[in-house]
Image (tube, rainbow, N blue to C red; front, side, top):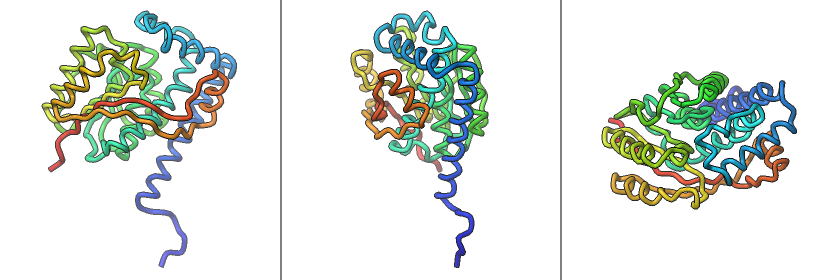
Amino acid sequence: MSGGGERTGPDAVADQHATRVTRWLDALDARHLDHLTFAEVRRGLQALSSIYVERRKRLAAGEALDGAGKRAAFSLFYGPLHFLLLRAVVRALGAATPAPRVILDLGCGTGAAGAAWAIETGGAGHLAGIDRSGWAIEETRWNWNALGLHGTVARGDVARAILPGRSGAVLAAFLANELPPTTRDLLRERLLEAARRGAAVLVVEPLARRALPWWDDWAAAFAAAGGRADIWRFPAELPERVRLLDRAAHLDHRELTGRSLFIAGPPSR
């Protein structure tokens, strides 16, 4: 008969993961707020939000990450939001089982999305990331290390990346809509080819439909390949720093929302 010792089993693993994420968020605060004030990050978040919502043509010029305030806002605000959304999507899809031997995070940004999938698998397998931004690569390395995850990240062209096949997984989170149409079309075909070779493929984008005129074509192609399209709305339990920034920047993330396309890899034998 147990005498109230250490917890074991799935609950204990969940506690460990929660502690790991909490420590990561605390370290993230310390990393960015030791040289910037909250007001500077809030202004950076407002500028960043304006670019993503109203001035998307400026994304191609790299203006989303052209200042310390915007970079800090991207890490402190959108990184955790993407982590929480991807974790919820992966859970809802059952995409953590079987655990991929490798998860390739295309256009990894700060690495938060790929990290969420990896943590849901229990940290099994290997993380790999590719991004065109040197700052994003360093931020990804730091985040994965802070979360206790093992991975490699490199600078490169997502359209030319070598994609895994069977037992692997490919993630394209908040990427496709930022690509030129010809590059986006090429990416779709390469993702579908990876799925035909046995990889699990997950595409995640914002819920706002006006910015995704290409989505229906992608959804039809994924459905023809045996995949599924979903719209997600999850209750948001935001970390304190994210909640404060959300309110200060006059944003509203009472829900975590997004849309996804998913092709599951073949069942393990």
